[in-house]
Length: 46
Image 1 (cartoon, one colour):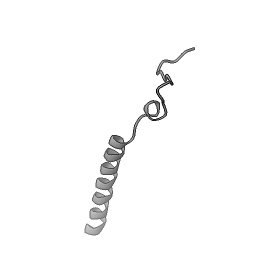
Image 2: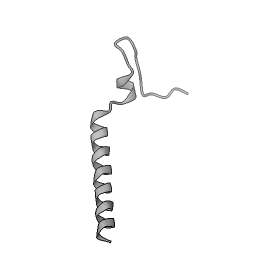
Image 3: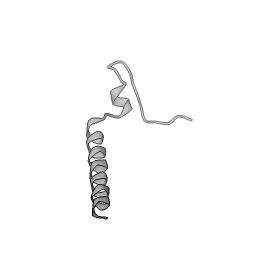
Image 4: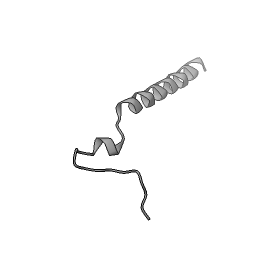
């Protein structure tokens, strides 16, 4: 039972840590895929 709980805690720590690291490294799509001449807006036009 101790090994199972230790594995569960380790998996939780790894998941939270990797999510935090990926959030700080990744850029939003409008920043990553834009050039100086491109204009990307967040407005929705109907």
